[in-house]
Image (tube, rainbow, N blue to C red; front, side, top):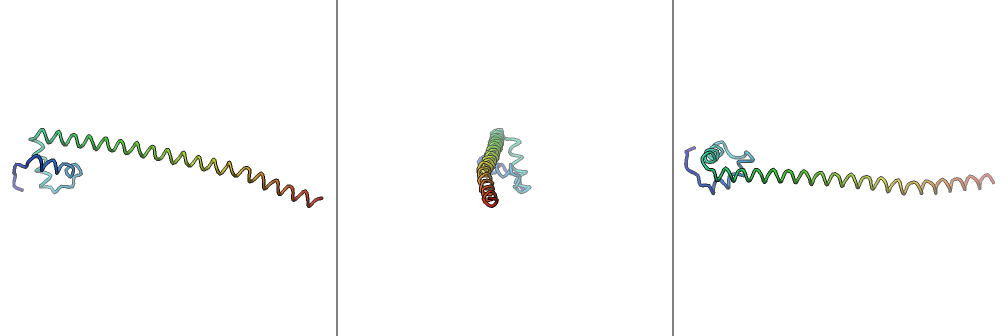
Length: 105
């Protein structure tokens, strides 16, 4: 690839793809050469990386909160099943006991 001076605007458009490592080898090399000589574009790359890191951290927090909510809901459902099951079992045992008593009488 011929080494040409690429404008900062074009490099800024390529930075997300550069970060994702999806550029062709030649374009990747041209971006790297530009970054080596351009403080402004290096700063822009650093800002993008910082934003990406913050986004990942926020995503992890959201996932943790979601999992915590699922666990809380699971415990709620288990409590409801047990809470409803005990009176139903008591009622069935009472009915069975009444039937046994009436058969023996």
